[in-house]
Length: 120
Image 1 (cartoon, rainbow, N blue to C red):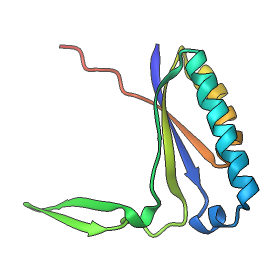
Image 2: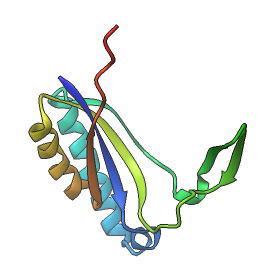
Image 3: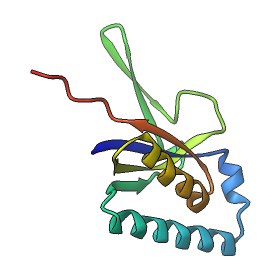
């Protein structure tokens, strides 16, 4: 079984802020149902929601130094709001899960397989 990361990408913080309380509750319920479905299918490995981008700290190497800055480095409105690590037999199965995640999470989903471990 291959592991995949499904990254939940939101268009903007402002877009999330425009959701009504009822829409937020619907989203929470949809995500809970999706999580339960992943778990029941033994596809669930781990998942988590992330705090908003303004809580981020970015570290970058610059020569021999490491620079620490507040917030994301890139000036963009899109941000990763959460992620799933799932088990799937192949990319098609991971994409099928991602299609459900798009609806539940109200955000774009980026699907990426984990690299194979190097052989010794």
